[in-house]
Length: 142
View (cartoon, helix red, strand yellow):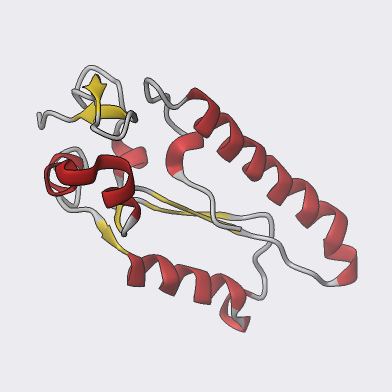
C-alpha cells in the first residue's frame, strides 16, 4: 500500500488526509497479522514530499515555489523523486524483503526522524490557500 508521512505529523489543514493515512497504517498491520498464516506479506511505503505531477494539480502556478518550500525542512535538503519511491515499492514486493511484513517504509529524506512538522524548529504554517483552494503550507528553514 502507498500511504504518506501524513499520519506521522500534524499538518494544519490536513486533518482528514492524516486520518486516512493513519487508517491505512492500521490496515497494513491488521492485514499482515491476518494474512501471514497464508504466507501473504503486507507492507506499506509512506513518502514525504515527492516531486510528482500532483504538485501542479494542488498548487497550480505556485508548484515551483512549493517544490522550493518543501525542501528546507527535509534533512537531505531536497524533495524525493518518484523513482526513489518506486524503488522502495519494488523492494517491498521482492524476495529481498521476504522476512518483512506489517512494515511501513518511510521514505522522506529524514523529515519525520529528526523533528516533527509544526514543532518549534520546522517553521511550517498554513499561509492561506492556493489558487486551487487547497491549504498553502509555508516552510521556513531553521
